[in-house]
Length: 340
Image 1: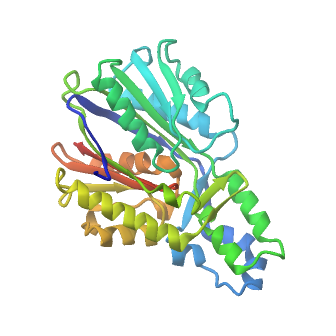
Image 2: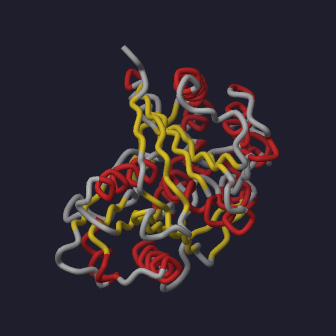
């Protein structure tokens, strides 16, 4: 049996993508300064976040800002850029990892803030860092089936609590080097929000066609990265190997139906320099076509793909081929092709 799940779309387009970033910049030097006593006790050299992950800084929400407010602002901007009224939206999918409560869904507050109609279906989809791509695929399926005309997919992340809790825990005297490195990924996280509007391609010839793609699961690795607001604990070496094996397997099987060797842009989930370089090498990508935002924004979870795409869109031209791709804790991988 095939290992990939394949989706193809004939009449769906990405009409807009927008992002809103926090005003507060937190540098890696600042975080390592706060962790100074632990770094000294564990004999770890400073500059670890820059040297190992390539993360120079990340954003955190400032006074009066929040993930929900920013996501609503990104959604309104995306609607405006798409030329779509809030009253026309038939579906809202929130894909964020961040959530203040177990219930209700994050989507309900966003639905209210965006002024969407009561007929707009709204819910959360959670799949770690792949949520946004999964949400786009689900929205495209509903548009293709004729259930709705327009959909909005959003994600808003807040890394503040997990950073504060991680730093406090790592400053305790009982933490050792292995424990420190198991929580290292938490220190690379950043905050930010993004939104995308999808619609029918025949009604919007100016839109960017969503052609489809593949997903693949390797859920035997579901314990390698486990997180909550208290902290994220990762077996980094095993996670990297498992993720690369999964991406390569999906890529090789997909090559029989999809030609992704010469895309104009590869928009990857932003984790670190190690992960990006490893994926580039593993599937032989042209490094010049793989933009990175992690040095400035860190890992913004599922919002990182649309944030990166939003920053690249002005440099893309009609006819360009774009591949969205990433790996999410669990493990899952997804790849989705857009015809710009």
